[in-house]
Length: 409
Image (cartoon, rainbow, N blue to C red):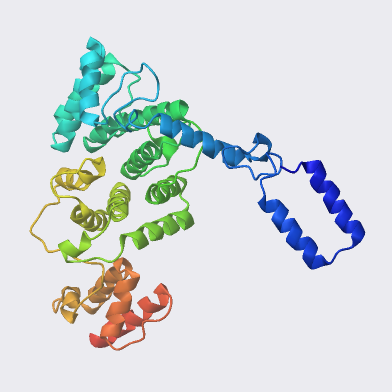
């Protein structure tokens, strides 16, 4: 075996003699192919010195070794990575039963009351649900159960509902450091409802409503798009910010999509329940500000988005709850917000027994209540231009009505 010193000396000799480049390269290849000992042999992956391994390679190698050692020992969801730890099967129902079995007497009672209240709420038995939730809070006043506020809201106990939502929101935010969006929305809905009922400003509401803690500016922002926009809508209503209110309502309406008379089509692919939440909270907002017909239309559309059989999410029962408490179930066909379909829609405006002055006043009242889309549709029906601002369209349609009835403007 040639030592490394012999090789170095040979190379030096060849360089001095200036042999041709070709011969030198051939000789070098021959020497490297020989077994020159450990120093000149290429190290294998396993024998490579530690200083030649990067941190990522070392971590990958260690992870592979750990996996090989634990093959057959670890099964995700069945075994524990902590030696001596008790393993639980990944089964929510089974875990709940185990918890109930190990819970104390008071904890078991609280669990039963909460389950009873939620079940009564899903069955629309609000008095029973309210009684169960009241018993729960008597035993543990700081319990987290914001659904109790929904029960009080639909029982028209708006002060009690606002207090419940505010208490749960403050508890949730102090405990978890995140914004309690649902609780804040419902608490604001109580305030807007009382403002509409009293026809006065918030400061005149007596007794005053429970207040929310200031939002933590450093807390994570709400990532659920529909709830974030809904929160902005109700805040704008309280602050009488018409610009923000209009913008938030338009955003929700764009998520809702078009009015659709096809029930099957209206339920297609809404896995995130964006349409359901948008229709419902739009209807809730219209309800608390006193616009009953608009609320009724939105709730009917929300009801169409609900899963038959009452889903696990509470939003699935709220449209049914709202319509049943308002007694809005009827045999009327659904009316979309598409304007007027034919000239008969205007027949009730005119009465032969009316005097010209009364007829003018009646037309003026109807024009005030018409929406922009209705004005445009009525003008298109008469072959008139539907472009322009709402006031321009009203003037144009007023002139057309007066001309049809032979009235002087």
